[in-house]
Image (tube, rainbow, N blue to C red; front, side, top):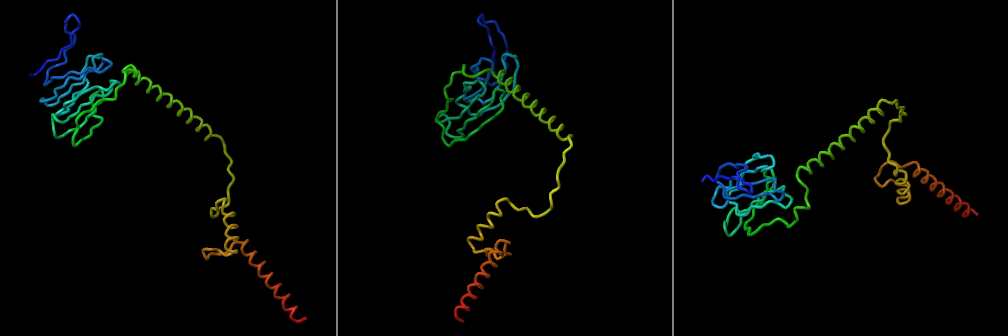
Length: 224
């Protein structure tokens, strides 16, 4: 210690130095672009994320007491795990993205094994291709929004004649139907003890006249 990591070609000529540190593990992602060199097990868990295509160090991170480490099949995420029986405490999963930023962590009382769901790396495109496609979507959405704003500005400049509506309390469209239904159910009386509607008043007067008419007919029959 400190360990030194070097990449050689097939003729054993050194191509790139990955630096020195407390390392005992190296992991290539399935696409062969990103590399993680780390010190797990009895080492403190230092990690260095490298972009081999750019020959540059992206970021350093840490995953203490890790027993398992593995790239996801799409090559975009790197998982570390502390498992039993190697360690009986602090069992956990950590997931980093390809730049070394921590994205997920979950603690367990006991964790014995963890694996990625098996998938073929060929199913997934390169990270650069995904970034380009996402940028294209954002640009298209921005253009659409810009066009919409122009049409909105054009419509706002056009003269618009608006007829003034008389002020008053808002009455929903179903209020007339509700009033008629209440007249049938409650005999023209407002169930809440409020004022009667015009229809209820007319019905009440009609019933009173019918009662007076029947009373008049009954009195004339008694007289005869």
